[in-house]
Image 1 (tube, rainbow, N blue to C red):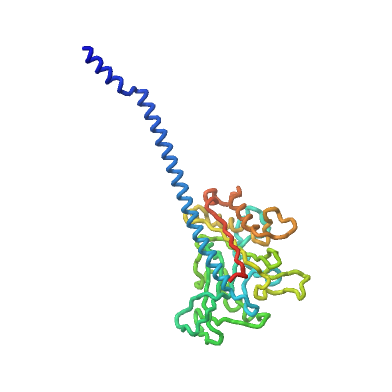
Image 2: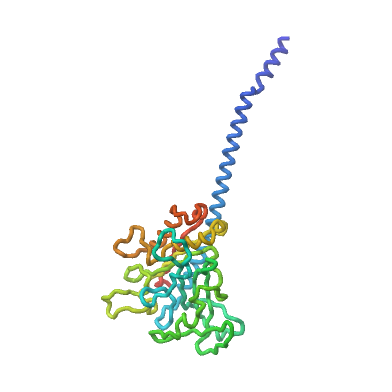
Length: 337
């Protein structure tokens, strides 16, 4: 009898009470909830990181491609350039079709992406029917933002050697043209290659940055000035500098682009994109990080203002989309090979 009671007491002491079971279940639930939250947070961070990696890779490819083209640019006084300039020869790149924004930031003028076109010693494409002996190593390269699709495009049109016959047709190939300075209007890029200077659909272009919607560039001169004019306008120079002259006054071209990853792009309506672009200010109007009260432009002014528009509480784009928009900048030193 005593032995049986002792055995029964031993078994009772090994059992869990109802309170202990409830406590264990509650602790387990807390642990499961905590692990689930960690998993969700990690998954969200990984997804966001992958989005950033995708758009980072796209921007890097585009900026690298621009760098190769600029590094092989023909810097000569007897060739033409389609680059933005201030003053009488300033091309209308800033209008660029971006005039439909609501102007949330009350800017005086609407903003638009830049364009550029220049000769470069890089491989271009030719229509069929031309032999390798007719093709020159020079191509006409152009960059722009398509104002309909809001995507970055590149053109790299192969040119024929001077003197080669140029058959007429839907897409005739033009010869590379050199001329004494000043270059006559008949030999300018705008006259001979309208595809390089328009903003409409053109089959000569290919999409190089499908998620890049804003493009701006400016110059660092050898005198240290940051400007939108590709030559030194110092009035004390003798003789005065009045033209690009093969970019001899330019130390570097600085490029800024803005992009959004493809998975976040559906969060923006076409009007959102238009409003965003119209509020991302051009270089010539950028106030700068400290206001630049002396009127002197600085590198980074444009990028700073763009980031303010994107990340500020402007109501232009949804917060989730704003988190996915990124701004990139690159400096291309023209003195380097």
